[in-house]
Length: 200
Image (cartoon, rainbow, N blue to C red):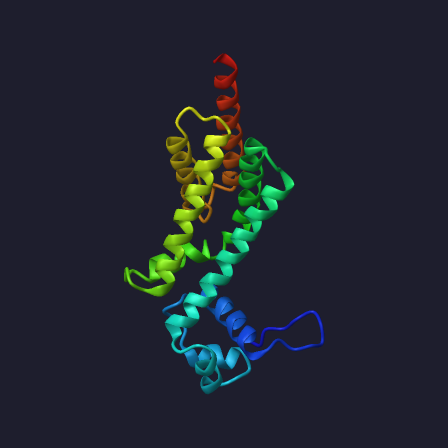
């Protein structure tokens, strides 16, 4: 299947390869897809693929970088929409994440799936994902500090437990309210922090 754009201008080969790889990785898994299948889906050939990516591992790593760039762009949007308001940023984050859960029902989280399929600690894509998760955790902890949580480190860990738990539960039948519940739990934690500050 060839990736298509909404315009008549075709994507350059590198972008077509990344788009095709991402679609196939999500549908069939990283290990289940070979470079020949990716090249065919991108309407190109292996020689062109290897001209842009030295190896399949490098292609996987670049695909992961693209996903992370989108995620970090969302954080920039959240900050721009709620400047100087850490409570609102945390609430906005939970709502955006809850909305994304519906997209994960078919195959789950692309990054979590990648971690499961790439157990080697030195794999470039795994290191990129782990570095992203550490940055995101630090960002959430900083928001918790600015929001006045009594124990920001604990609060950030709880937010991450909620996040990872929601990802794990979203594919379970009968747990379709998981996004709504995630939003409510984050709202309660933020409200509880506000109440604690008022009592001080």
